[in-house]
Image (cartoon, rainbow, N blue to C red; front, side, top):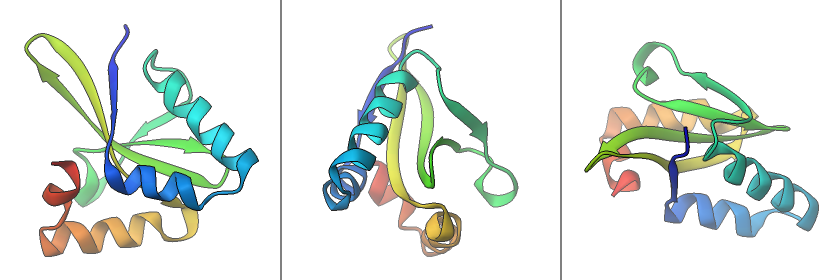
Length: 102
């Protein structure tokens, strides 16, 4: 099933910080996400509404939505594996996750 992948500002900013080769790999992963390809997994615990895309040591957190019959995957947070989940949980507790998704 094809989906529309929406890339939010934080993810774009993270992409800009990467060297050329990791940036290309992550863009390729985001493009494959539209066809549900890649290393995808639903998160657990407090983060259970979200899914992650794994590309090497990087993670992209996204939320599936259905808008007017169209499946959208809103990619709103990306970082390296070593920090992504801890930062995301802090953002969730502080209520800032909604700001990232808008």
